[in-house]
Length: 118
Image (cartoon, rainbow, N blue to C red; front, side):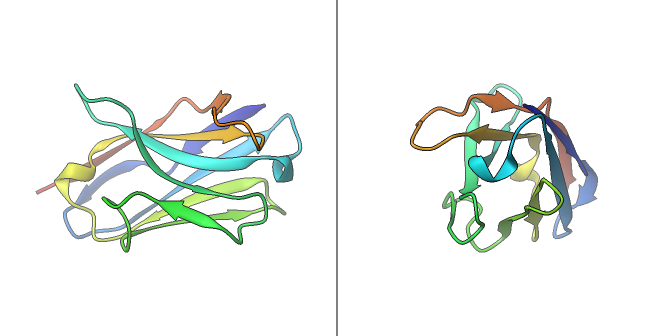
């Protein structure tokens, strides 16, 4: 399985970005997908996840109401729509995949940088 993130960049506070994660090398619908992020000097933080069909999503309190996770199973792609961005959202964002009922995400992308300026 290979995961490749894209869509990161520099945005002003209050702005929006949409990240994408393309999946290959397996059957996309077997996998629960998730987004994580890691800011400099900090531990990796869970952002949210989505089940195989897209019918069930979860997100951390820090992004709830601002970030939306979705997937397009026809395109083998995971998305993270980020609105109302602020500087504390600055981090490298990673997508990850796991096969339920595993609790561990086994596959990770290389990450995409998101920088939010004040």
